[in-house]
Image 1 (cartoon, each protein chain N blue to C red):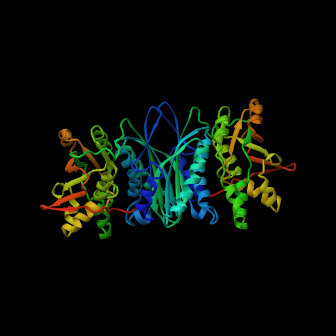
Image 2: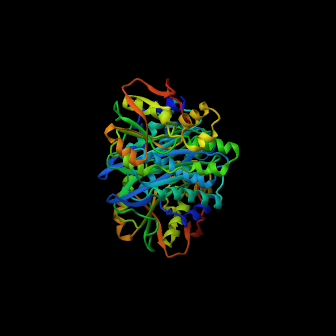
Image 3: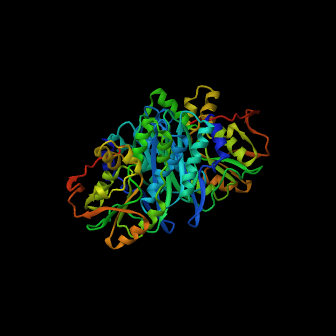
Length: 294
Length: 294
């Protein structure tokens, strides 16, 4: 099985399917999530140890944000061929910085000798009313936080040798506050870890709805505009590259004003089960269900 | 830095040092722990997927037991070169079985393509009064649960091709109930993940005490007796091989009766800072600070 098939099989076997698992315990809803990252797939050679620390923790915090939750604590398991003090210090600084932005802390972990740099982060969070992927309704608005294509642009910059800017783009801020606010009225939500296209398909499957989004409304990161040579490439970086870690949410139309106040962009609306479609200059295309494969 | 040096450096940098991190939150003490295991170091070629699932989860549950805690939930991040349905099913069965023995559940995880089979488990537990490594006092009794040398014996059996028995020994039961009972009166406790010798040194460092243990009192696993060719090898398998995941605890002498009722063995006593020593046939030796390196 490939990863997508394996995940589908797993979803019939275990409680997976949302960004975090929700556990009713200790008088609240605990949120639990874990993510494995490694050198080959997740860390370009020129990403700094600081970026690696930041990003490893941020992906798990982003999962908590995707449920409208507040992170409490993060664990890090760090496997590497050797343990260099300066590198570990830099890694931890990045990890601690992004934690402190989100008001949570690193509470320990594990060190392991491993041929390939491999980092697993796990986060514990809580939410009074966690937002799942399954509640979207036809006519809901579709909204995204921030800009899209940031990671796609960073990967291109790394390949071009523009490592400073690439590292900066690689350090994204998990949308904890936005998630908390959106969580108050969103019918479904998730973080865009596999790209916007794949995320739309994931909510589509979980909520049994369709989507119509408009390309013109997509908030492109400004670096994407500069870097993409063609409209095609721009789409690739923005819709399919993934790992942008912005939030995708569906919202009843009466909350449009709140969206504007949050600075969150509307990109289309939910439809009744007729696929995931996008308008490009007056033409309607089906948005493919593909994205980042971990 | 090697792993031991790196851990020491990290302990000055972050809150690590006990089997779990203790977080006062939601009206209780939450316990958090994470462990990374991988093919090369942790899973002999002949270990079944069922054993791998069992053991991956059991190491984290054992950390919760080592604090006298009750496990609530486990997360699994599973990295592998490919995802085979039968193998995943077997892995999950082992993982679920050991979870159910401990009254807790697997609440999701992550799948990742990885060149080397790599599994990170994280556990969330709770304890009213978590037992740390730092509370041992001179004249306390030293006690261990179960038998020692089980994993050392299993590794030897794997090497000899006796895979059925080896797999059976590899599936150890985390000492949750014993940890809970011992936790009521122990002054320090931990699981013996790096071997008895290393664990005694770890409590010695944290509590600023010494130890005198008596070789004759050590509870050897019966397979160790059969497999070890010399007294030297028996010591190696029992004291230094590690990954036995029994509990080591120090207990005020007035609780000796409770120990007997629990079926826990006394192996010596705590002394005032004069090193970790063992009596072998009337001779006193210093017990080296070495053990399993992950």
